[in-house]
Image 1 (cartoon, one colour):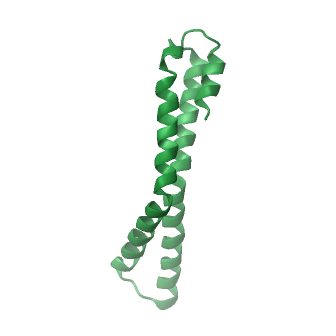
Image 2: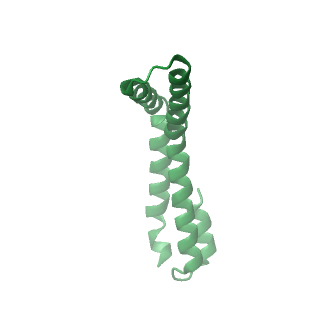
Length: 102
C-alpha cells in the first residue's frame, strides 16, 4: 500500500528521515487495521456482558471471559483470511523494496 509511497518519497536517494517516518507510519496503520476487528468485537462483547451483569446483578468472573473468547475466536475465523492477506501484502511490498532503500 503505502510502501510504494515511501519509495516515491525517497526519490532514489539513501534512506532518510522522511522514508523512515513513512515506513513507520505504514507499519502502524497496517497493524491498526489488522487488529481493529478483534479489538472491536472484544470491546462490544465485553460492554454487552458488563451491561447484562449490571442489570441482573450477576458478578461471575467467567461470565465475562467465555463470551469474549468465543467472539474473538469467531472473529479470527471470519476475518483471518483478510488479516493474513493484508499482512502478507505488506511484508511482500516491504521486502521487495529493500534494494531501493539503500
